[in-house]
Length: 209
Image 1: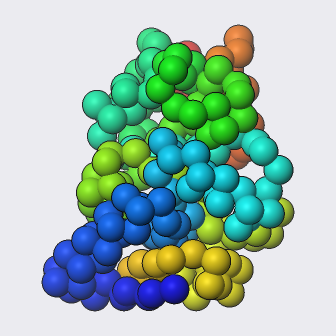
Image 2 (image 1 turned 90 degrees about the vertical axis):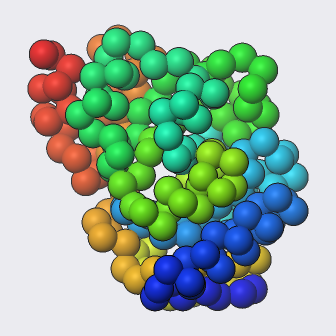
């Protein structure tokens, strides 16, 4: 396991280059986001995704995807009117939206065979540059053993997953230190599956407008 601390633009360039190499080779990275530290892998590499489940000791449940842009989001899913409203108001930011996935794009293991996928664009410069360098889409589950507290710092993530990953990118504490809010838009009415940084009432208010 290699640890890179991002303290300058030069460090960041090195981190991005290393992350790209690791992801392209099917490896796993721990990387910072606006909410908590994430465990990253290529969502199109089935072996890499299987390794995510092994490292987290997690049963086969859907994994969230982080994207660097709307165009990358639209590669894997469709955004209806409700999703578009939320995207305009809360992205980039701490809202994960569960929407219908496009058929035949993502491996079934990523979504646990479901026809939906959870996506978001984080509000974090380092995260966005890493995701973009790694193809625009990256697994974005929290870097912890399933059921444990999500890590706010690289140190906490290392304590959880240690040498089970290939690269750790440390850019200091995650600004928000709390998981994203998750809303499922594939059911009617939409359901808040997890209330995190963004309050449910603020999301529902936007949907009513």
